[in-house]
Length: 269
Length: 269
Image 1: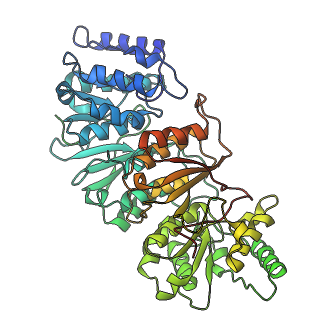
Image 2 (image 1 turned 30 degrees about the vertical axis):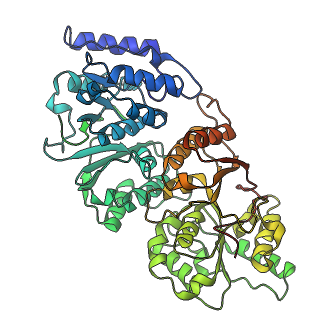
Image 3 (image 1 turned 90 degrees about the horizontal axis):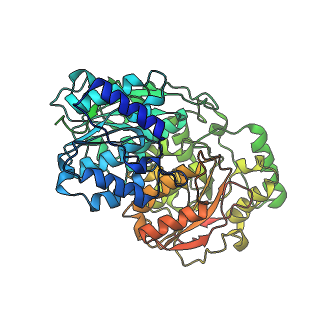
């Protein structure tokens, strides 16, 4: 289902075919009809998107809910989703990233054991995007070890976020407890002053200060800063880690690209 | 002084001349030399900007600290400023808006009685900008009543923010208590999906939900949304007020323009 922006049927067809080719008789994908709705910015209105999410999350015959695409819209349906989760929702894998991080964080905070950052069907639209979508499938179908971000150990608590999405979770009732977690952060198409501003906020937060450390994913497609910002993304991360006392742990192999690796919220289940 | 972006000496000269013309022998402006520094994105590094702010805030011979310009950078110096305020800082008027909101909110939260949203010297650069700068002076020099946003009563608790700045205050140790306040919100150059995303966050916050109400200032210079967002800024504000139970109180005469009116944090002192 698509909690933010819509996808079209052709994309769904390509991803379905890929799943059939890679996992004949082992994987069955269902695209919720909601994916193809349109309501202004969103793939259907809030009620349609929340209902679609709950249709799948609460269905005991499904193993996973794979978020179809990012954009913006997941945060809007969080309250309705959390109020209506059935027991079947807790035994399920949730996979997505970017905008989906709002829902993943809320589900993780609610105790879902397998909220997971990773590729989405819409990654098929990137050049070479089959690689990313195949990685998502390899994780969903067989928990293949080399789909994981290299620092994921199976014992370290981890979480991965789009920087802007994480900044917009702060102060909400759905900000998850990330104490003792390694938090990996990526972003795309944000000016460096915005990257800095979001990290200034995030690293000041008392909850985030309990994290085990930050890792920097890819900060890509950065619009020009006027005047030049004067620091690289890594320098910005190192600065805010130094200010806040949160350990800077190096890079993370995540981003808005086809190399985006899998990161469990918590430990992999 | 300039907590974010720098200004140049020509601008300072024009504003100084305006003050002399309007208030001969009644107003003396001092531009801190820090205003003209440059360090990447900022008007000097964090230490230079924080020191300049404290030089003026802690000087008992000055009546006000007028923030020279917005941009980005005020949030970065909040901790150093708060840790070093002297008693003289509490008797002073602070005037600015946009990026300056980070500092104004932090000062208000610390008990400064006259943190104030309103025009800045850099508004002189707008067409017709003398009007805005003269309004700032009329407030600073004589608390002229018609400089005030029309809904400001002298008894109602108020606050005014740039939407993006307020969203980046959430979850920080400097988020002020805005219970029982009418919060006026403006923004500029943000996509409607970003306006919606920030309001989704802000109106979910338990502290903000104690506000007396929201007023919408001007949301100007909005880049095109792809696809069209489907709601106007006012519809977006009304939606989130309805969802959160915060009363929507109508419009506010504030914005990134020459008509931007004065709004005290708290009640006018």
